[in-house]
Amino acid sequence: MALFVNQAEINATLWKACDTFRGIVDASEYKNYLLVMLFLKYISDVWGEHYQTLSEQYGGDEERVRRRLERERFVLPKGSSFAELYAQRNADDLGDLINKALSAIEDENKSKLTGVFRNIDFNSESNLGQTRERNTRLKMLLEDFASPALDLRPSRIGNLDIIGNAYEFLIGLFAAGAGKKAGEFYTPAEVSELVAELVNPQPRDRIYDPTCGSASLLMKCAAQIQKQGSRDFALYGQEINGSTYALARMNMFLHGIDDARIEWGDTLRNPKHLEHDGLTTFQVVVANPPFSLDKWGAEDLGSDPYKRFERGMPPKSKGDFAFISHMVASMDEVGGRMGVVLPHGVLFRASSEGTIRRHLLEENLLDAVIGLPSNLFFGTGIPAAVLVFRRGRSDDRVLFIDASREYQEGKNQNKLRPEDLEKIVQTYRNRLELEKYSKLASLEEIRANDFNLNIPRYVDTFEEEDAVDLGAVQVELELLEDKRAALNGQMRGYLLELGLA
Image (tube, rainbow, N blue to C red; front, side):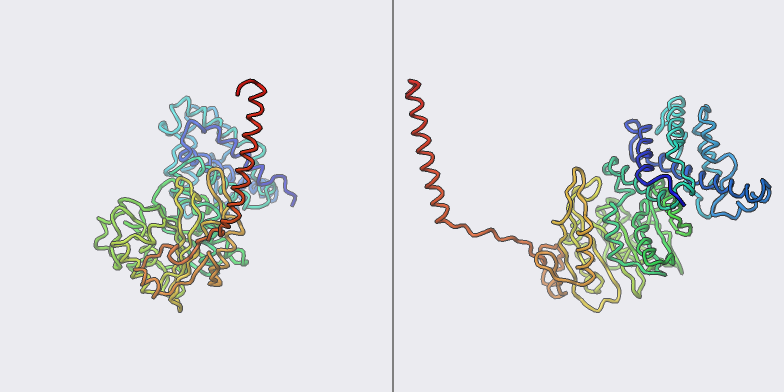
């Protein structure tokens, strides 16, 4: 099948469509409208082409076409397609029409899309302006997506991943413009890739992210298994932000994953993945939780029914170890492994965090500590670390990797290059000790450091300065002094000629 479009063309057209909102609506808000419209345009084009094919196949028999379409992956109800909304782009109640179309799509696809659009209001005065301005912007948005370059019929794009990739492309660009708010929905692609490779998901694994954002980490884990030629995995996530939860659900759908269980709610106060009156456990647990979250729920969880905080209660103003404790409790007893991205403070802060850290080490759960470069994440320049945990470890040594000095420097954000990722992953998988890069530290050594995991305590990156040859320096100074004296003499000669000396 010949392709008539490529990824770069779609991405460029989508980014141009952002001009409808750029400078008027905050990037953290208008991303929702662009991504929902991309979603609607894609499912409309898929549905429309399939309808046309079946209509030709059944000789225009509408009843047979309808019955066949009802068995498809999703149903697009009459009046809800992009084309039908585009035809009404001059309507006075355009925002309301779009909302009703999205609601009808949810109703017809309850198992896959229930609640996906509930937090995204195309009739919002606070986000999109008063009626006249709002209608103008929405009309422009529909016209942008009616561009021939965004004809997303399967016969034209040929590959579902083109749309999934476009979705990820927009999320990444919105994150760049959203500042600190970007952390609510986006983990840089290379960091997600790193965490996924470290936990090494396998076919038949259940994979869980308790702070899943737009599901980029879960998607990277799924991709690791798909590379092995398998789609035998199950994805689970929970997200506290309603609009970000919607992005995760749409992201899964666009990547062809219909059975992911993504829940909306506060994971610490109200975990949604439960079984047998306890937490569901998973072979793989991954997360990039909000760094040092204040007011995470300590006052509500003194008697946690899920016994997540038996190693100690994290401080009220820093939720890092609350997420760690939840994730550890969510790991399968057999073969469970976990990768989590956190600020460096978790490695050395004392008091209750020090107590929890000691218990985790004495239980032989911590497998590796990997220091990342600074300025990798949108909204914060502080360096982060990846902590890897495993159940059933036979070795009590912890691998420390200092990967903070190997990266590509960028104008706004730094980036891990493919070779940087490869070095980290191979060092971890092979438990290598490399000079000034990695070190295996025994529990005894860590205990002697009072369970402080600060990476420089274990990986010596000190670079000795070259020895100074004082004799050579003295000779150089004498030569410079001779030159200075000669120049002074020359200058006096010029001044005498000018009658100035």
